Image (cartoon, rainbow, N blue to C red):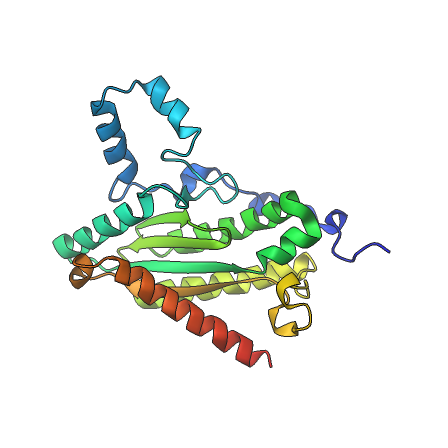
Length: 237
């Protein structure tokens, strides 16, 4: 018997749902890429050598989401440090957003990696579009299998939260359109609270006092994310 979530059940994408070019999310803020390239070039590496290194992850973009690669290297942490300095220097408001894709394991189990990546790219495009609309600069990272993050500059907390609520709403609409709202979770097969797909998030406003220990920003955003995730599960009871 064919599983109801077989790969062939994926509906075709409209043009506005297609994965955008990775450069869409590489807005020139803190200029991590440019600064790193200057340092590398100063060491004597040629453009051809630098391009070859990019194939192995240097300043790479994630090939699924199009976000900056944050699973290795220091790009995400360097961007955090630069963003804190920017806030301290200019007084502009900036925020760090931590995000988890719910039930990536379910997508992989039912569609395989290719089909799961197809859905993941659609969700990443939604995230990029909504966040870029509320900040003058938005820098996105994929820093784990189902973990994403963004630095948003020159915006407000209300605007960021409204954008993330819009992300959640759009992802739920996507889930319904692709018949994914009841997708089983392999890790929690007997718990309906974990079914379907979604995006959980947590936010931390950047401030000068984080300069001494920038990792506290990650901790604060992750703490809110886990609290919101637990709250969603309770609501599903």
